[in-house]
Image (spheres, rainbow, N blue to C red):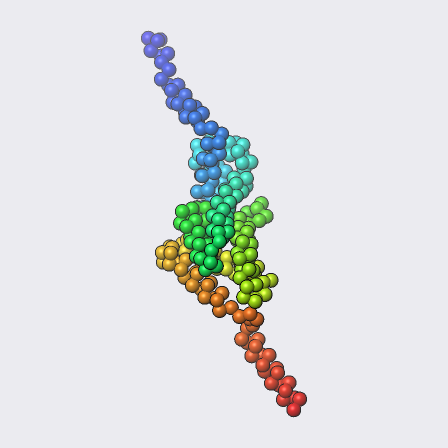
Length: 237
């Protein structure tokens, strides 16, 4: 009978898909795309990830990605910004609390390792090479900001100990670089455990700082100067 062919059943799947999509607000869709992009960028890098793959994973068309972020570059930039802010806020909070300098080192090392453990994808994205469209790499910018905080702490300590406080920025870069690159190593190995890695970082950094020379020099350079003085003295005689 003709009434049997008027059943709405064949239209139900299309209606269901439409309703399912409409349940996600613009803000929710944006968060979904950010999460998907974060995972893909971490696994494949910027160059290895395409807008097509992002859209397909989200179950949307490519124009939706462009609508929210203007394309892959825009999505990547937001992901990096979110991860950078997340880690910088944690590091800033750790470094600005009044503490003994050694405790500051311990907290800084543990804060970075905590982030690596909890936000592995985010850290992988930060340490990857940034695309040409990103003039400032996320990780390098982050390290620079953290080093600025460390610089003020070191400058104060150097002044108290009679050292040249103008060298504090250089030492800040050394310390932050040591923690950051050790973190990259630990990202892939995860051995020894987090607390032990932090302890070894602090062991090297703190014991190195406590034994600083006020006027450091290379031994070979010093030996060369001594030989020169010896030779000059012999000529005078």
